[in-house]
Length: 221
Image 1 (cartoon, rainbow, N blue to C red):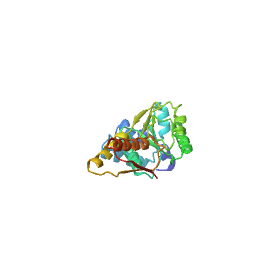
Image 2: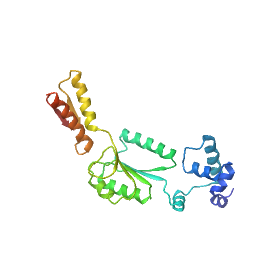
Image 3: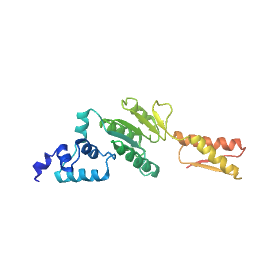
Image 4: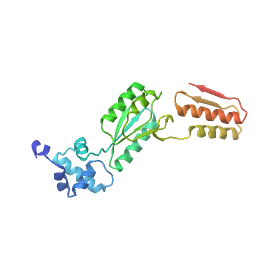
């Protein structure tokens, strides 16, 4: 097939070549995981042979429905955040969405720019784990008009849906466990106290040590 015919291929052509419905072809090419692997292979092979390229942005503009979710991450050298990216992308694809990843590199100014970039992509929603210092992120997010989730490093002063752990309770329980094992000289080491969850962990350690009447040895490195 010459290049002109390839460039003119439509979604309907792909569906016909793959022997599936138009809806099934659309789901597969959008990244949905709800279609059997055999059907997915048929559709992708047909698309490859026809030279079909899905214009995601045009499709979203036609339907007036975004299938993109933005995720602003502070540090991709941190294995915890990498695991989150992998899990979120898997869940997004299963639901027919795609993940737009933006890396803030623990730089507040870059984070503000990345937030603006994500919002410019007309996303259906955004997830953010703020970097050190929340001011830049919150300043940008105050005008955000899409569903927003703040994860892990949560600032309770900002009105957003949140997903986090009870850092205070976790640190207090961990310290209490060591005390119950008979340890008395327990040191708490933290790399910074400019994050809410770091301060909560430090407070949890201090509360457990105070309850046990033990001297505290907290170090910021």
